[in-house]
Length: 327
Ligand code: HEC
Image (cartoon, rainbow, N blue to C red; front, side, top):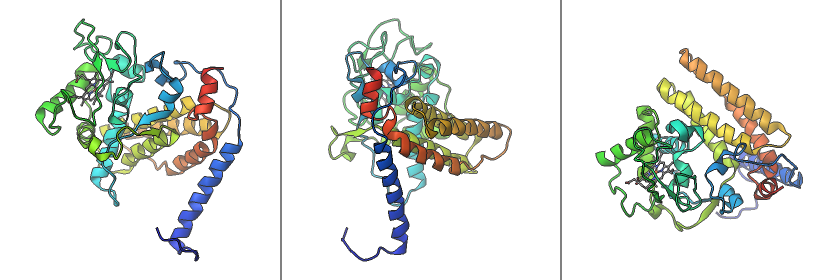
């Protein structure tokens, strides 16, 4: 970008104003300072702790993620962009799974974080060494439980190596993924659009998209908030089938719950999260009764402001999380 010292053109000014406001909010959040004393955090209050190996660095596991190796988004979003985003949100949602896995809050991405692997994954009875899982465990599957304990390393789905099916447009791959959802994790067959979106998302993953596949990214509240926003876009698409809208309402509410687990201090955020979750539930009732979904953009924007203001005091902050895990 060329550095010009003149007044920015009008359309840039609102953008700059937005950045200033956000920056100010971050500064205020930082000033709020020292971690808040809170009740100890356990796997009851923070579900993600349920599948982190005891010997792993829990703070790191909860705040840092392997980089996603997805294609760069095009300048102008297309229907394909939305499909990939919604595929990722389904992949990251317990709503895609059923049975014990969904009840404990597990999603595909608990094992395949950002579509990669998870070296710290551990569930007693499912894992051998950390980073492995027995995907024929009867804990998760009524159908596939084979009675044998045979955990294998969780593969990085972006490397597409080893025993992975190379053609992700093949019937074989489709059958494999359907089997994972319906048989392995006792899920309901997802709505056709959701299933197609998951397949498209899986097909988009490739380490070739990453400059440095070993890089990591901060896993903060912005990712969960963005997922709520993206999931809610489908509600406004008149032509989307009701079952797809209901699926993404479940996904959105689950992301709100994840945020709620981490925004534990006094403040606006918790109240906003609870209000929005209730509004999504009402929207679901409305859709079941045949009415169109309400516009939640005002509430979503207010939630965004509260998250920015209180993020530094939430359990998304490594320092606050460390203090809460080890009081
Ligand atoms: C409990 C951890 C765990 C969860 C949850 C999980 N996976 Fe996996 N996944 C594995 C393991 C282990 C393998 C390697 C064994 C295998 O291929 O069956 C694997 C393999 C895969 C493969 C490679 C298959 C191939 O042959 O190309 C895909 C794709 C995949 N998983 C997608 C998913 C999807 C989609 C979900 C959610 C519906 C999911 N996984 C949930 C652990 C998990």
